[in-house]
Image 1: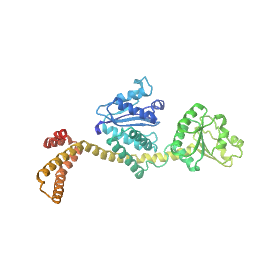
Image 2: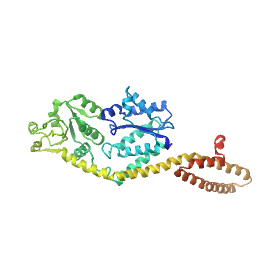
Image 3: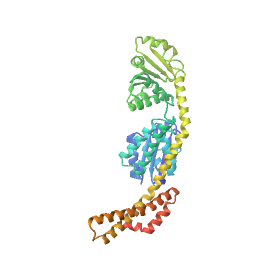
Image 4: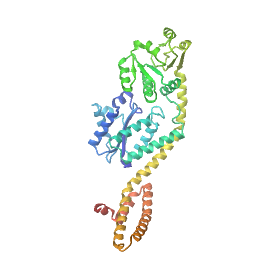
Length: 419
């Protein structure tokens, strides 16, 4: 099963945002894709991971279906020019590489922001979708639980999850520290403004309103995240209502000025978080009593410090992953010999029962109980060494030879057909 695990990956490492957006899958789309895979191919242990930065499909099959699955995904998303998209995908056709890749994705090593704290939850959602459709077998169950345990060790033993390592994360962390349940106004939906919105949706209890010059863009994002929308023409009324204003407007001179704040006389305490370059909030706004301004430089400085700590933790994180992969690899190899062990136990148990039936007819109940205990104990001791040898052979990659020997010695294949 280990060697049959494979995957395809489209991510920020190889594909621009415009391409990733076209191939993103929500929960309904991911489940639909999984069901189509089940209908068309002989696959098991299917996992579909889709975020704003990646769309990946993992599966187990004796056949390499990577190219077929890429085509199916593109067709499912209504893309006819298949050839121009295929170069954006990474393929993992070896089980060891696919497992290692999933570990690295799930821990945040491959995230756009190293150590991304959202990705473990996104992997858990994908796992739940597989379980909902009964497409997670013993292999995937064990793999995901090993990954979750490794993630826990990463959080406990390293600095990889410490601090907000991107400007958008740091901005959300800052506004959450200012007050509980703030009324937040997001102005401008460039890349950073959009990232702030997504991070707010994931981690905050804030009451969020979005304003963008192009109303259709704010309508679309607000519908996705469950936020409110306001017209740009109503911005002053929205400022008066908000506790925190996050601005990422692109313009040559400040949009939020001291004069604007004077016009809004009588407003409550305000925090401005200016993420624009050049600045969109004039430093003079802080001359108004009750107004505080945080600039992108101070936020970026905190984010850079956190990112540096995370990067320093990468070797430790990779060490935790390698240890977990080795443990999972040993378990998955033992799965290969598990059927042989069960057949050997069955064959010996059959012999034990047949011999007891022949020689115990005249025994009393107490004598029969003693014989049962003795023969069962003998059988377990006889089994112990072959089982240990089989497991050791797994680690050496020599299990198949020993399986063949045991099959011949105990006629296990014949036993399978008769019992």
